[in-house]
Amino acid sequence: ILPGLVLAGPVGFLAMNVLPFVLGGRSPVRQWRVWLVAALVWAWLRWDAGGVVGGLARVWVGVAVLNVVACVILALGATMRWSGWAGVWWRMFLLGGGHVVALWAGWRYGWGWAVAGGGVMAGLYCLAVLRPGCQWLGPVRRRSGGREIWITIDDGPDAGDTPALLDLLDEHGRKAVFFVIGEKVRAHPELVREIVRRGHEVGNHTMTHPQGTFWCAGPWRTLREMRECQEVVFEACGVRPRWFRAPVGHRNLFTHPWAAVLGLEVMGWSRRGFDAVERDVAVVLERIVPGMEAGDIVLVHEGTPIAKEVLAGVLRR
Image (cartoon, rainbow, N blue to C red):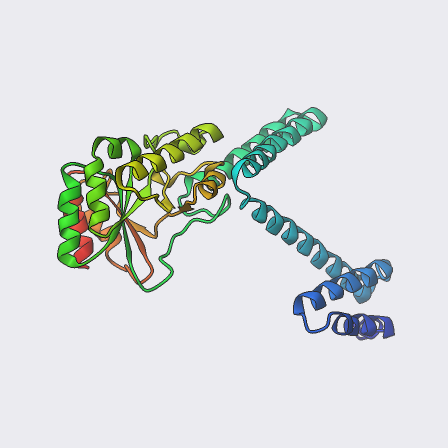
C-alpha cells in the first residue's frame, strides 16, 4: 500500500492539487470546479495504473459523476420556477417525455420495462402532489419565517362560523389568514369585507374547492380555479390575495406556474389536527397544540361543527 500511495502523488498529481488555487482565485466554487476538471483529467490518464493509483482514479471519476448528477438535479429544480405557459409546457414536456422513454424501453427490452417506468413516474407524481409540503414542483411556505405562529383558517367564509371566529381572534388580539373559496365569497361578500376590515388577510383557496380532483387537474382548469377565486375576492373587498393554498394541500403539476403569474405564493402548514374530518375537539387539539413553537403555520377549518372550539383551544395556547 505504501508504494502505491507514493506513486499516487507524483509531480503531476501535486500540480493538479495546486492548480485550482492558482486558477480559481479566491472563489471556492471556481477552485472546486478547476480541481474537479484537473482531477478528472488525471484520473483518465491514470485509469489503467492499477493498485491504489487506479483506485484513486476511479474514486475521482465517481466524484465527477455525482457532481454532474447534482448539477442536473439543480438545473431541473431551477426550471420548476418557470412561470406561465413556459412553465406549463415545460412540465408537460417532462411528463410526456418520461412516458415516451418508458414506451421506447418497453418496445426495445420488453413491456415489463414500460410498466415499470410508468409505475415509477406515477409514484413520483403522487409523492410530489399528494404530500402537502413537498417542494419538488416548486416552493411551498411551511414556516412563518420568524418567531410568530401563523393561524390559517380554510374553507370559508361561513355564515355561522366566520363572525364567531373573528370575535375570538379579536378577544385574543390575534390575526389570521382566511383561505376562502370563491363560490362562498360570491355568496357572502360581506363576510370577506369584514375579515379585511378587522385586519386579517384573505388567501386564495380555489373557486370551487375540488378536493378530490385538483391534484390531477390540467393547466386550463388549474388556471380557471385560481384566477376566478382571485377575481371574486377582489370584487368583494378590493384586495388581491397573495397566498394560495390548494384543496387538502394537494397541488398539481401546473399550480406553481400559474401562482407566479397571479402574484401568489403557495402556502402549506406545519401543524394540523384534521379537524375537517375529526369531530373530537380534544383529539384535534392534541395533534396541534403539544410542541407548537415559534415559526409554525397552523391549519384549522371553518364550516365544521367544532370550528369555534378548535380555534379557541389554539388561541389559548
